[in-house]
Image (cartoon, rainbow, N blue to C red):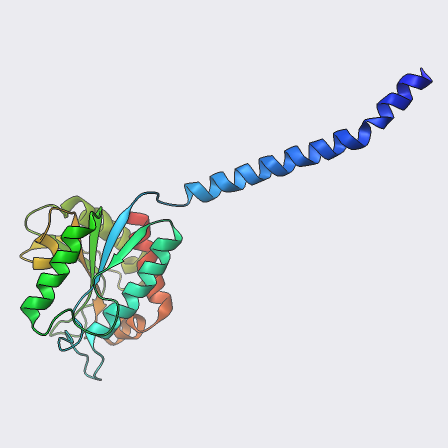
Length: 222
């Protein structure tokens, strides 16, 4: 009996060590699984920061240019999507336009989109209205219909997480004759991230935290 007891004790440390290794391996596997479930694998998205360079887009009464706001928001969206495993292609990476004329600029954006092989195109913009009370995020898509289902899904997420929080108004995704949303067969949408003509929206549009909320909604919709 003593001999058996000695032999059993001799294996306690190796067995305990092996058990620790098993626990570590299981924990690592669980962590990897959790991380994998929080990403969107093998998805490519084109992010199009609207306007730029000579084309500043709409301007606030204080001189804030839509093109600058669009680019800042796009960069935050890019960071969030890439953090979730999405491959991101930008049409505009800096303050400049993609050409010396509007026609050339739009043509080059279309070329990037059509060569991308992307699963979705999201064009980031800022809205303006003659009456300053209008605020909130609204999604548009081309009347070709390719982006319709994605636009509806994205608008629903914005209504739930952002519009309900700030403007208290739900919007519907709308179709229209928008070049950037219909220049390819890729599901494409235009996100008007708020109204530069509304003081509350403009204040939000200039903050990183609001851009991050927009980015999170886009990620949820994807």
